[in-house]
Image (cartoon, rainbow, N blue to C red):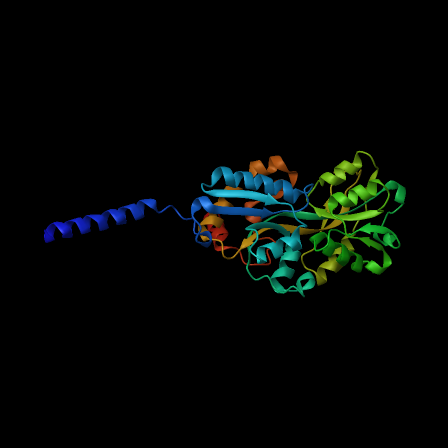
Length: 326
């Protein structure tokens, strides 16, 4: 009887072990979540910008190609807001400009009072973000110096565009006291320009920007040049800036227009698992055609340039993928 009891107890324990093993589901490793419970929210920007469009394309690819990932996009005020969302672990991926990412990581500029966001990690540098200072023909504005006394959309509060606007105006000896600054998103700025409530606006994005394209269907849009010499001077204090040109024909402009540019980054959090970030990186770079079909800014994404202008450490998962594809 005793032997039978021992056999029965052993059998029950064996079955419990088997059942426990069978019921265990594959874990991704991101914060200890099971694969089917891994949510990847991508913080983007305004719904009319390249961040939102490309974020949607990446989200679709992650949902299709990575088993167990449930991805979605979130429209935000862009770079500075996105860095904060990563810092508070409310999103997993985000688009942001390299200058703002550096400010967040070091706790400077717009993050001086907020403090450092030290959990930021890079996935890849993607493409140049062009500072597009626009007006319409009827304002008579031709140069940055003409903005004094004018109503100017300087970007949404806390956005990278607003940082660009303030720094570029400063390089020309202009402060917000010299203009009527209005803190507007891309869509808001263009809408206000349509009805004459705004004379000019800063929009920092990839080319072309859909809201500027929309404005050009009803108004004679003019791009105000940000001169190369001024950008080079600006870069001495803020090394993230580079001089670029907005090519002729982008917005019916007959000639190339000099402007400033910073680099768009895709960033994540340090606590995401190496496997998850590796698979995200792999999915993005093995499906670039899907991104290029979504927005022309993606045409500039190159595997050999993923570290260009990256002011923070790469996530080990992304680093692993890039080391495999040198």
